[in-house]
Length: 383
Image (tube, rainbow, N blue to C red; front, side, top):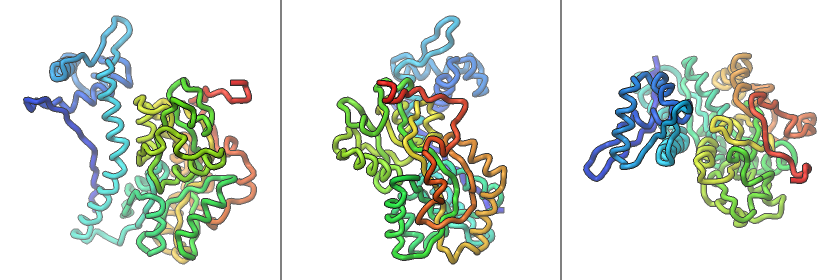
């Protein structure tokens, strides 16, 4: 049996005397934020109400400030300090989890080598994405060894070019930018013949504070005075998409306040916006919904796994394609807000999508999450 390694971020706070904030208090505050009730948070955390109040009082004594406000008949509300602690915890998890997942994958391989635990692993290099995460988890559950590395797109493409990985995750925006992005990917591969295994189609758009208080309806609005933006890191597909959309609008990156403020995952961008540190970020829909943000769709992308064409018939790649073609795996991808599995596992050339897919508008290309409404009115409504 090949062991599976899990690493989770943890953080502590201590005062000048070395007194440490009880880590479980942060978990409790997160649950209060979710449930709006200390009693419900206790039930979910499996602690008594009395013990929970003891944790809260310890925290308040450490900070010298309240963490909760109780109102009869209205449940529990976090104070600004309590909210800050919750969003600090969420930002830490969103920023570090992909890095720790990559490290866990490396440690699994090292342990497996010592134990002589089976075949060489599938090497999957990609920037962090939720469909990639779903595929990775499925392969691990089935005992398929996987070396997962979350890398910037240029690094992952270079690894594929140099035979350092088997599959490389890339996103291709559908429509006007598709040819240019595909050409950039091909240039990075130095003439290597590759094929694209379809993983999912996903929606990209602006993540906005609930209610869209700044009335942001497109990329051009990001250049308005007083609008704070948080970006993805250089080398990410989302950063490239933003640059192309800014150029289309005739805007320089310097016109966007916060263009240089970077996060390394879609979830970290969502957490940054949800914590009130930015008014908008560009990313996929899944974390926007998880953090209860507004989401304004701007583009759809085909996300796929590039591999050397001659490797398509190898057992490892064939196994991945077989997994992606299973109804239950496609259903799990479809369950991610803004994602659609479609013909997952199908092989296509890198250079273009089928003409029929290109002809469809981005908003119609993907299913709408029926549980969430988009409250951002259009400019055509006169707003």
